[in-house]
Length: 465
Ligand SMILES: Cc1cc2nc3c(=O)[nH]c(=O)nc-3n(C[C@H](O)[C@H](O)[C@H](O)COP(=O)(O)OP(=O)(O)OC[C@H]3O[C@@H](n4cnc5c(N)ncnc54)[C@H](O)[C@@H]3O)c2cc1C
Image (tube, rainbow, N blue to C red; front, side, top):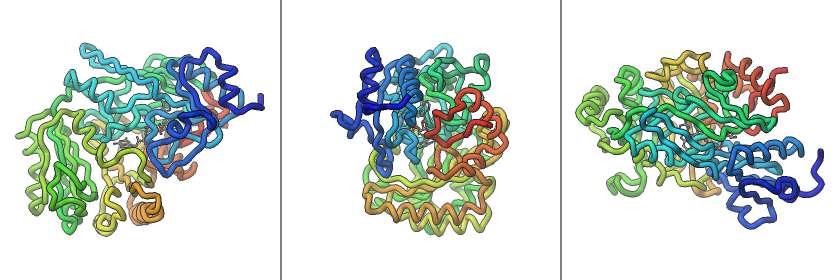
Protein backbone atom coordinates (compact mmCIF):
# COMPACT_ATOMS: atom_id res chain seq x y z
CA UNK A 1 0.00 0.00 0.00
CA UNK A 2 1.45 3.46 -0.76
CA UNK A 3 0.68 6.69 1.08
CA UNK A 4 -1.12 9.44 -0.82
CA UNK A 5 -1.82 11.81 2.03
CA UNK A 6 0.93 12.76 4.53
CA UNK A 7 1.61 9.94 7.01
CA UNK A 8 0.38 11.91 10.04
CA UNK A 9 -2.99 12.54 8.36
CA UNK A 10 -3.23 8.91 7.21
CA UNK A 11 -2.43 7.66 10.71
CA UNK A 12 -5.13 9.84 12.26
CA UNK A 13 -7.69 8.59 9.77
CA UNK A 14 -6.76 4.91 9.95
CA UNK A 15 -6.03 4.70 13.69
CA UNK A 16 -9.06 6.52 15.10
CA UNK A 17 -9.01 4.43 18.30
CA UNK A 18 -5.28 5.04 18.88
CA UNK A 19 -4.38 5.16 22.58
CA UNK A 20 -1.68 7.80 22.63
CA UNK A 21 -0.51 11.02 21.00
CA UNK A 22 0.84 11.75 17.54
CA UNK A 23 2.25 14.70 15.57
CA UNK A 24 3.36 15.44 12.05
CA UNK A 25 5.51 18.29 10.68
CA UNK A 26 2.54 20.66 10.44
CA UNK A 27 1.42 20.18 14.04
CA UNK A 28 2.14 22.19 17.18
CA UNK A 29 4.64 20.35 19.35
CA UNK A 30 6.49 18.77 16.41
CA UNK A 31 9.65 20.86 16.94
CA UNK A 32 10.11 19.63 20.50
CA UNK A 33 8.95 16.10 19.77
CA UNK A 34 11.59 15.56 17.08
CA UNK A 35 14.54 16.55 19.31
CA UNK A 36 16.86 13.85 20.58
CA UNK A 37 19.62 14.09 23.19
CA UNK A 38 22.48 14.61 20.68
CA UNK A 39 21.86 18.01 19.08
CA UNK A 40 24.10 17.02 16.15
CA UNK A 41 21.22 14.79 15.02
CA UNK A 42 18.65 16.90 13.16
CA UNK A 43 16.07 14.57 11.59
CA UNK A 44 12.52 15.34 10.39
CA UNK A 45 10.23 12.34 10.78
CA UNK A 46 6.92 12.30 8.90
CA UNK A 47 5.08 11.02 11.98
CA UNK A 48 6.02 10.86 15.67
CA UNK A 49 3.69 8.62 17.64
CA UNK A 50 3.65 8.22 21.41
CA UNK A 51 1.66 5.08 22.08
CA UNK A 52 0.37 4.54 25.63
CA UNK A 53 -0.10 0.76 25.42
CA UNK A 54 1.46 -2.30 23.78
CA UNK A 55 -1.63 -2.56 21.55
CA UNK A 56 -1.06 1.01 20.34
CA UNK A 57 2.61 0.17 19.66
CA UNK A 58 1.41 -2.75 17.50
CA UNK A 59 -0.91 -0.42 15.56
CA UNK A 60 1.98 1.93 14.68
CA UNK A 61 4.29 -0.95 13.78
CA UNK A 62 1.65 -2.26 11.34
CA UNK A 63 1.03 1.25 10.00
CA UNK A 64 4.73 1.77 9.21
CA UNK A 65 5.00 -1.68 7.64
CA UNK A 66 1.85 -1.34 5.52
CA UNK A 67 2.84 2.12 4.27
CA UNK A 68 6.45 1.02 3.70
CA UNK A 69 7.77 3.84 5.86
CA UNK A 70 11.12 3.67 7.68
CA UNK A 71 10.50 3.01 11.38
CA UNK A 72 12.60 4.22 14.32
CA UNK A 73 11.95 3.34 17.95
CA UNK A 74 12.86 5.78 20.71
CA UNK A 75 13.38 4.81 24.34
CA UNK A 76 15.31 7.57 26.12
CA UNK A 77 16.51 9.24 22.89
CA UNK A 78 20.15 9.17 24.12
CA UNK A 79 21.74 7.25 21.29
CA UNK A 80 24.84 9.02 19.99
CA UNK A 81 24.19 8.01 16.40
CA UNK A 82 20.59 9.25 16.65
CA UNK A 83 19.03 5.82 16.20
CA UNK A 84 15.86 6.91 17.99
CA UNK A 85 14.71 9.00 15.03
CA UNK A 86 14.57 8.93 11.23
CA UNK A 87 14.03 11.34 8.32
CA UNK A 88 10.67 11.05 6.52
CA UNK A 89 9.61 7.97 8.46
CA UNK A 90 7.72 6.99 11.58
CA UNK A 91 9.07 7.35 15.11
CA UNK A 92 7.59 5.27 17.92
CA UNK A 93 8.45 7.37 20.97
CA UNK A 94 7.85 5.29 24.10
CA UNK A 95 7.95 8.20 26.53
CA UNK A 96 4.32 7.67 27.64
CA UNK A 97 5.18 4.12 28.72
CA UNK A 98 7.10 4.81 31.91
CA UNK A 99 5.47 2.73 34.65
CA UNK A 100 7.85 1.30 37.25
CA UNK A 101 6.62 -1.46 39.60
CA UNK A 102 9.03 -2.75 42.25
CA UNK A 103 8.40 -6.08 43.97
CA UNK A 104 10.73 -5.88 47.00
CA UNK A 105 9.86 -9.43 48.16
CA UNK A 106 10.61 -11.07 44.82
CA UNK A 107 13.44 -8.56 44.24
CA UNK A 108 12.29 -7.70 40.75
CA UNK A 109 11.24 -4.55 38.95
CA UNK A 110 8.97 -4.16 35.91
CA UNK A 111 9.80 -1.16 33.82
CA UNK A 112 7.95 0.47 30.91
CA UNK A 113 9.85 0.50 27.60
CA UNK A 114 10.21 4.31 27.62
CA UNK A 115 11.65 4.71 31.13
CA UNK A 116 14.90 6.45 31.87
CA UNK A 117 17.26 4.98 34.47
CA UNK A 118 16.73 7.82 36.91
CA UNK A 119 13.08 6.82 37.35
CA UNK A 120 14.02 3.19 37.92
CA UNK A 121 16.92 3.90 40.31
CA UNK A 122 14.77 6.21 42.46
CA UNK A 123 11.96 3.65 42.71
CA UNK A 124 14.20 0.67 43.51
CA UNK A 125 16.43 2.79 45.78
CA UNK A 126 13.48 3.36 48.14
CA UNK A 127 13.82 -0.34 48.99
CA UNK A 128 17.63 -0.35 49.14
CA UNK A 129 17.69 -2.26 45.85
CA UNK A 130 19.10 -1.67 42.36
CA UNK A 131 19.79 -3.37 39.06
CA UNK A 132 22.91 -2.66 36.96
CA UNK A 133 22.51 0.20 34.48
CA UNK A 134 24.95 2.91 33.33
CA UNK A 135 26.41 6.10 34.76
CA UNK A 136 23.86 8.78 33.77
CA UNK A 137 20.27 8.87 34.95
CA UNK A 138 18.75 10.38 31.79
CA UNK A 139 19.77 7.42 29.59
CA UNK A 140 16.91 5.24 28.36
CA UNK A 141 16.39 1.79 29.86
CA UNK A 142 15.43 0.55 26.37
CA UNK A 143 18.52 1.28 24.30
CA UNK A 144 21.01 0.79 27.13
CA UNK A 145 19.62 -2.63 28.06
CA UNK A 146 19.10 -3.97 24.56
CA UNK A 147 22.71 -3.09 23.69
CA UNK A 148 24.18 -4.57 26.91
CA UNK A 149 24.38 -2.01 29.71
CA UNK A 150 27.76 -1.16 31.30
CA UNK A 151 27.99 0.87 34.48
CA UNK A 152 28.94 1.31 38.11
CA UNK A 153 27.56 -2.10 39.16
CA UNK A 154 29.10 -4.17 36.33
CA UNK A 155 31.91 -5.81 38.33
CA UNK A 156 29.64 -6.81 41.20
CA UNK A 157 26.38 -7.65 39.43
CA UNK A 158 27.11 -7.88 35.69
CA UNK A 159 25.68 -6.07 32.68
CA UNK A 160 22.07 -4.87 32.53
CA UNK A 161 21.29 -7.83 30.23
CA UNK A 162 22.66 -10.28 32.80
CA UNK A 163 19.85 -9.17 35.10
CA UNK A 164 17.05 -9.15 32.55
CA UNK A 165 14.47 -11.80 33.45
CA UNK A 166 11.81 -11.18 30.80
CA UNK A 167 10.54 -8.66 28.27
CA UNK A 168 7.26 -7.97 26.49
CA UNK A 169 7.98 -7.45 22.81
CA UNK A 170 5.89 -6.21 19.88
CA UNK A 171 7.22 -7.97 16.79
CA UNK A 172 7.37 -6.68 13.20
CA UNK A 173 4.04 -8.45 12.60
CA UNK A 174 2.44 -6.32 15.34
CA UNK A 175 2.02 -9.44 17.50
CA UNK A 176 2.78 -9.13 21.24
CA UNK A 177 4.95 -11.84 22.81
CA UNK A 178 6.74 -12.39 26.07
CA UNK A 179 10.41 -13.38 25.91
CA UNK A 180 12.14 -15.12 28.81
CA UNK A 181 14.25 -18.20 29.43
CA UNK A 182 11.06 -20.30 28.97
CA UNK A 183 9.06 -18.29 26.43
CA UNK A 184 10.52 -17.52 22.99
CA UNK A 185 14.03 -18.34 24.29
CA UNK A 186 15.73 -17.48 20.97
CA UNK A 187 14.18 -14.03 21.01
CA UNK A 188 15.17 -13.67 24.68
CA UNK A 189 18.75 -14.54 23.77
CA UNK A 190 18.75 -12.04 20.88
CA UNK A 191 17.45 -9.03 22.80
CA UNK A 192 20.18 -9.38 25.43
CA UNK A 193 22.72 -7.40 23.41
CA UNK A 194 21.29 -7.49 19.88
CA UNK A 195 19.77 -3.98 20.23
CA UNK A 196 16.40 -2.92 18.87
CA UNK A 197 16.63 -5.31 15.90
CA UNK A 198 13.95 -7.75 16.99
CA UNK A 199 10.95 -5.71 18.05
CA UNK A 200 9.69 -2.98 20.34
CA UNK A 201 10.14 -3.84 24.00
CA UNK A 202 7.17 -2.38 25.84
CA UNK A 203 8.17 -3.71 29.27
CA UNK A 204 11.35 -5.08 30.88
CA UNK A 205 11.58 -7.19 34.04
CA UNK A 206 14.90 -7.07 35.95
CA UNK A 207 16.40 -8.88 38.93
CA UNK A 208 17.26 -6.53 41.83
CA UNK A 209 20.20 -6.63 44.24
CA UNK A 210 20.80 -5.16 47.65
CA UNK A 211 22.46 -1.84 46.72
CA UNK A 212 21.47 0.99 49.03
CA UNK A 213 24.32 3.25 50.04
CA UNK A 214 27.48 3.09 47.95
CA UNK A 215 30.85 4.73 48.59
CA UNK A 216 31.40 6.71 45.44
CA UNK A 217 33.07 9.70 43.86
CA UNK A 218 36.17 10.64 41.87
CA UNK A 219 39.89 10.67 42.60
CA UNK A 220 41.56 13.21 40.32
CA UNK A 221 45.25 13.59 39.51
CA UNK A 222 47.14 16.29 37.63
CA UNK A 223 47.16 15.54 33.90
CA UNK A 224 50.98 15.39 33.99
CA UNK A 225 50.67 12.16 35.98
CA UNK A 226 48.27 10.50 33.55
CA UNK A 227 50.71 7.90 32.15
CA UNK A 228 51.63 6.77 35.69
CA UNK A 229 47.98 6.71 36.78
CA UNK A 230 46.94 4.64 33.79
CA UNK A 231 49.87 2.21 34.21
CA UNK A 232 48.97 1.62 37.86
CA UNK A 233 45.24 1.43 37.09
CA UNK A 234 45.64 -1.25 34.37
CA UNK A 235 47.29 -3.60 36.90
CA UNK A 236 45.27 -2.60 39.96
CA UNK A 237 41.68 -2.72 38.77
CA UNK A 238 41.47 -6.31 37.46
CA UNK A 239 42.88 -7.52 40.81
CA UNK A 240 40.55 -5.37 42.95
CA UNK A 241 37.56 -6.94 44.75
CA UNK A 242 34.32 -7.07 42.76
CA UNK A 243 32.68 -4.69 45.21
CA UNK A 244 34.89 -1.95 43.77
CA UNK A 245 34.14 -0.53 40.33
CA UNK A 246 36.28 2.27 39.02
CA UNK A 247 36.36 3.65 35.52
CA UNK A 248 39.39 5.61 34.35
CA UNK A 249 38.68 8.97 32.70
CA UNK A 250 40.26 12.00 31.09
CA UNK A 251 38.10 14.98 31.91
CA UNK A 252 38.06 18.66 32.86
CA UNK A 253 36.93 19.52 36.37
CA UNK A 254 33.32 20.79 36.13
CA UNK A 255 33.08 24.54 36.83
CA UNK A 256 30.80 24.39 39.86
CA UNK A 257 30.19 22.83 43.26
CA UNK A 258 31.14 20.46 44.81
CA UNK A 259 34.51 20.96 43.06
CA UNK A 260 36.91 23.54 44.58
CA UNK A 261 37.08 26.71 42.52
CA UNK A 262 40.84 26.50 42.00
CA UNK A 263 40.35 23.25 40.07
CA UNK A 264 37.48 24.42 37.85
CA UNK A 265 38.05 23.57 34.16
CA UNK A 266 41.49 22.10 34.87
CA UNK A 267 42.31 19.12 32.66
CA UNK A 268 42.85 16.06 34.82
CA UNK A 269 42.80 12.30 34.75
CA UNK A 270 41.03 10.24 37.35
CA UNK A 271 39.03 7.25 38.44
CA UNK A 272 35.32 7.42 39.27
CA UNK A 273 34.69 4.90 42.03
CA UNK A 274 31.66 3.00 43.20
CA UNK A 275 32.12 0.60 46.10
CA UNK A 276 29.03 -1.50 46.74
CA UNK A 277 28.25 -2.16 50.37
CA UNK A 278 28.40 1.32 51.88
CA UNK A 279 31.27 0.51 54.28
CA UNK A 280 33.74 3.39 54.07
CA UNK A 281 36.60 1.46 55.65
CA UNK A 282 36.20 -1.46 53.23
CA UNK A 283 36.09 0.99 50.32
CA UNK A 284 39.24 2.77 51.52
CA UNK A 285 41.04 -0.55 51.94
CA UNK A 286 40.03 -1.63 48.43
CA UNK A 287 41.28 1.63 46.83
CA UNK A 288 44.47 1.85 48.90
CA UNK A 289 46.84 -0.15 46.65
CA UNK A 290 46.18 2.26 43.79
CA UNK A 291 46.34 5.43 45.85
CA UNK A 292 49.49 4.32 47.67
CA UNK A 293 51.28 3.69 44.38
CA UNK A 294 50.67 7.19 43.02
CA UNK A 295 51.46 10.84 43.80
CA UNK A 296 49.03 12.82 45.97
CA UNK A 297 45.81 13.41 44.01
CA UNK A 298 44.38 16.89 43.45
CA UNK A 299 41.12 15.64 44.90
CA UNK A 300 39.92 12.46 46.56
CA UNK A 301 36.15 12.66 46.76
CA UNK A 302 34.56 9.26 47.47
CA UNK A 303 31.95 9.23 50.23
CA UNK A 304 28.74 7.41 51.13
CA UNK A 305 25.68 8.26 49.04
CA UNK A 306 22.49 6.58 47.83
CA UNK A 307 23.10 4.65 44.61
CA UNK A 308 20.47 6.77 42.81
CA UNK A 309 22.43 9.96 43.70
CA UNK A 310 25.57 8.52 42.16
CA UNK A 311 23.59 7.66 39.03
CA UNK A 312 22.56 11.30 38.58
CA UNK A 313 25.94 12.81 39.55
CA UNK A 314 26.90 13.54 35.90
CA UNK A 315 23.47 14.78 34.80
CA UNK A 316 24.36 18.47 35.30
CA UNK A 317 27.57 18.14 33.26
CA UNK A 318 25.78 16.47 30.35
CA UNK A 319 22.31 17.99 29.86
CA UNK A 320 20.39 17.20 26.66
CA UNK A 321 21.04 19.38 23.62
CA UNK A 322 24.85 19.26 23.31
CA UNK A 323 26.74 18.12 20.22
CA UNK A 324 28.19 14.61 20.69
CA UNK A 325 30.61 12.64 18.54
CA UNK A 326 31.55 9.12 19.64
CA UNK A 327 34.00 6.33 18.94
CA UNK A 328 34.51 3.13 20.93
CA UNK A 329 36.56 -0.05 21.19
CA UNK A 330 36.91 -3.15 23.34
CA UNK A 331 40.34 -3.57 24.88
CA UNK A 332 42.13 -6.61 26.33
CA UNK A 333 45.28 -4.88 27.49
CA UNK A 334 46.81 -1.42 27.61
CA UNK A 335 50.49 -1.69 26.55
CA UNK A 336 52.95 1.11 27.29
CA UNK A 337 52.66 2.48 23.71
CA UNK A 338 48.88 2.79 24.20
CA UNK A 339 49.41 4.50 27.56
CA UNK A 340 51.64 7.07 25.86
CA UNK A 341 49.02 7.74 23.15
CA UNK A 342 46.30 8.09 25.80
CA UNK A 343 48.42 10.57 27.74
CA UNK A 344 48.91 12.66 24.59
CA UNK A 345 45.23 12.79 23.49
CA UNK A 346 43.91 13.01 27.06
CA UNK A 347 45.84 16.26 27.52
CA UNK A 348 44.34 17.68 24.30
CA UNK A 349 40.58 17.43 24.91
CA UNK A 350 39.12 20.10 22.59
CA UNK A 351 36.34 21.27 24.96
CA UNK A 352 35.83 20.91 28.70
CA UNK A 353 33.02 18.32 28.41
CA UNK A 354 34.97 16.11 25.99
CA UNK A 355 36.13 12.95 27.69
CA UNK A 356 37.50 9.43 27.44
CA UNK A 357 36.29 6.63 29.71
CA UNK A 358 37.62 3.10 30.20
CA UNK A 359 34.76 1.01 31.62
CA UNK A 360 35.88 -2.23 33.31
CA UNK A 361 34.45 -5.47 31.92
CA UNK A 362 35.31 -8.18 34.40
CA UNK A 363 34.06 -9.57 37.68
CA UNK A 364 30.46 -10.70 37.26
CA UNK A 365 30.49 -9.72 33.56
CA UNK A 366 33.13 -12.43 33.02
CA UNK A 367 30.95 -15.08 34.72
CA UNK A 368 28.79 -15.22 31.57
CA UNK A 369 30.14 -17.06 28.52
CA UNK A 370 30.59 -15.24 25.19
CA UNK A 371 27.79 -17.19 23.50
CA UNK A 372 25.32 -17.07 26.42
CA UNK A 373 24.16 -13.68 25.16
CA UNK A 374 24.95 -11.85 21.89
CA UNK A 375 27.38 -9.60 23.83
CA UNK A 376 30.40 -11.54 22.67
CA UNK A 377 33.29 -9.56 24.17
CA UNK A 378 33.02 -11.18 27.59
CA UNK A 379 36.75 -11.77 27.49
CA UNK A 380 37.60 -8.09 27.02
CA UNK A 381 38.88 -6.14 30.02
CA UNK A 382 37.64 -2.66 29.15
CA UNK A 383 35.28 -0.80 26.87
CA UNK A 384 36.87 2.45 25.76
CA UNK A 385 34.70 5.37 24.75
CA UNK A 386 35.99 8.58 23.21
CA UNK A 387 33.36 11.33 23.32
CA UNK A 388 33.76 14.81 21.90
CA UNK A 389 31.09 17.01 23.51
CA UNK A 390 30.18 20.70 23.32
CA UNK A 391 27.05 22.87 23.35
CA UNK A 392 28.24 25.03 20.43
CA UNK A 393 27.60 23.69 16.88
CA UNK A 394 30.59 25.78 15.75
CA UNK A 395 32.83 23.28 17.57
CA UNK A 396 31.57 20.18 15.76
CA UNK A 397 34.70 19.81 13.60
CA UNK A 398 36.98 20.19 16.61
CA UNK A 399 35.20 17.54 18.68
CA UNK A 400 34.88 15.17 15.73
CA UNK A 401 38.54 15.49 14.70
CA UNK A 402 39.83 14.89 18.23
CA UNK A 403 37.54 11.87 18.69
CA UNK A 404 38.46 10.26 15.38
CA UNK A 405 42.21 10.98 15.71
CA UNK A 406 42.24 9.59 19.26
CA UNK A 407 40.30 6.48 18.20
CA UNK A 408 42.56 5.86 15.21
CA UNK A 409 45.70 6.17 17.33
CA UNK A 410 44.40 3.62 19.88
CA UNK A 411 42.41 1.25 17.64
CA UNK A 412 45.52 -0.81 16.73
CA UNK A 413 45.75 -1.79 20.43
CA UNK A 414 42.07 -2.82 20.63
CA UNK A 415 40.39 -6.22 20.58
CA UNK A 416 38.65 -5.43 17.25
CA UNK A 417 34.98 -4.72 17.89
CA UNK A 418 33.20 -2.12 19.99
CA UNK A 419 30.27 -1.77 22.37
CA UNK A 420 27.38 -1.13 19.97
CA UNK A 421 25.78 1.43 22.29
CA UNK A 422 28.79 3.71 22.01
CA UNK A 423 29.28 3.64 18.26
CA UNK A 424 28.19 6.15 15.65
CA UNK A 425 26.89 4.91 12.31
CA UNK A 426 30.06 3.03 11.32
CA UNK A 427 28.79 0.47 8.83
CA UNK A 428 27.93 -3.20 8.66
CA UNK A 429 31.44 -4.62 9.08
CA UNK A 430 31.87 -2.80 12.37
CA UNK A 431 28.55 -4.21 13.64
CA UNK A 432 29.58 -7.71 12.61
CA UNK A 433 32.98 -7.27 14.30
CA UNK A 434 31.22 -6.30 17.52
CA UNK A 435 29.15 -9.51 17.66
CA UNK A 436 31.88 -11.85 16.34
CA UNK A 437 30.71 -15.49 16.38
CA UNK A 438 27.25 -14.52 17.64
CA UNK A 439 26.41 -12.54 14.50
CA UNK A 440 25.21 -15.49 12.42
CA UNK A 441 22.79 -16.68 15.11
CA UNK A 442 21.47 -13.13 15.48
CA UNK A 443 20.96 -12.94 11.69
CA UNK A 444 19.00 -16.23 11.73
CA UNK A 445 16.73 -15.05 14.57
CA UNK A 446 16.28 -11.74 12.76
CA UNK A 447 15.21 -13.63 9.62
CA UNK A 448 12.59 -15.52 11.60
CA UNK A 449 11.03 -12.55 13.39
CA UNK A 450 11.73 -9.59 11.09
CA UNK A 451 12.49 -10.97 7.59
CA UNK A 452 11.84 -7.62 5.86
CA UNK A 453 14.17 -5.79 8.28
CA UNK A 454 11.46 -3.37 9.40
CA UNK A 455 13.53 -2.66 12.53
CA UNK A 456 16.65 -1.39 10.78
CA UNK A 457 17.24 2.02 12.38
CA UNK A 458 19.77 0.55 14.82
CA UNK A 459 23.20 -1.08 14.70
CA UNK A 460 21.64 -3.31 12.12
CA UNK A 461 21.69 -7.07 11.98
CA UNK A 462 20.57 -8.05 8.51
CA UNK A 463 18.22 -11.05 8.24
CA UNK A 464 20.09 -14.20 7.16
CA UNK A 465 19.37 -15.10 3.54
C1 LIG B 1 25.38 10.86 28.19
C2 LIG B 1 25.36 9.40 27.88
C3 LIG B 1 25.80 8.49 28.82
C4 LIG B 1 25.78 7.12 28.56
N1 LIG B 1 26.23 6.25 29.50
C5 LIG B 1 26.18 4.92 29.28
C6 LIG B 1 26.57 4.00 30.27
O1 LIG B 1 26.99 4.36 31.35
N2 LIG B 1 26.49 2.67 30.01
C7 LIG B 1 26.02 2.21 28.83
O2 LIG B 1 25.94 0.99 28.66
N3 LIG B 1 25.65 3.07 27.85
C8 LIG B 1 25.71 4.41 28.06
N4 LIG B 1 25.36 5.28 27.08
C9 LIG B 1 25.01 4.75 25.76
C10 LIG B 1 23.59 4.33 25.73
O3 LIG B 1 23.48 3.02 26.23
C11 LIG B 1 23.05 4.36 24.30
O4 LIG B 1 23.13 5.67 23.82
C12 LIG B 1 21.64 3.82 24.21
O5 LIG B 1 21.35 3.60 22.85
C13 LIG B 1 20.65 4.79 24.79
O6 LIG B 1 19.40 4.23 24.91
P1 LIG B 1 18.10 5.15 24.72
O7 LIG B 1 16.90 4.29 24.91
O8 LIG B 1 18.23 6.37 25.56
O9 LIG B 1 18.31 5.59 23.22
P2 LIG B 1 17.37 5.76 21.95
O10 LIG B 1 18.07 6.78 21.11
O11 LIG B 1 15.98 6.03 22.34
O12 LIG B 1 17.44 4.34 21.27
C14 LIG B 1 18.65 3.74 20.92
C15 LIG B 1 18.43 2.46 20.15
O13 LIG B 1 17.74 1.52 20.99
C16 LIG B 1 16.49 1.16 20.43
N5 LIG B 1 15.48 1.14 21.49
C17 LIG B 1 15.39 1.99 22.56
N6 LIG B 1 14.37 1.62 23.35
C18 LIG B 1 13.81 0.53 22.77
C19 LIG B 1 12.73 -0.31 23.12
N7 LIG B 1 12.04 -0.12 24.24
N8 LIG B 1 12.41 -1.34 22.29
C20 LIG B 1 13.14 -1.57 21.16
N9 LIG B 1 14.18 -0.79 20.78
C21 LIG B 1 14.51 0.24 21.59
C22 LIG B 1 16.21 2.21 19.39
O14 LIG B 1 15.45 1.73 18.35
C23 LIG B 1 17.58 2.61 18.92
O15 LIG B 1 18.04 1.72 17.92
C24 LIG B 1 25.32 6.66 27.32
C25 LIG B 1 24.86 7.58 26.37
C26 LIG B 1 24.89 8.93 26.64
C27 LIG B 1 24.44 9.92 25.62
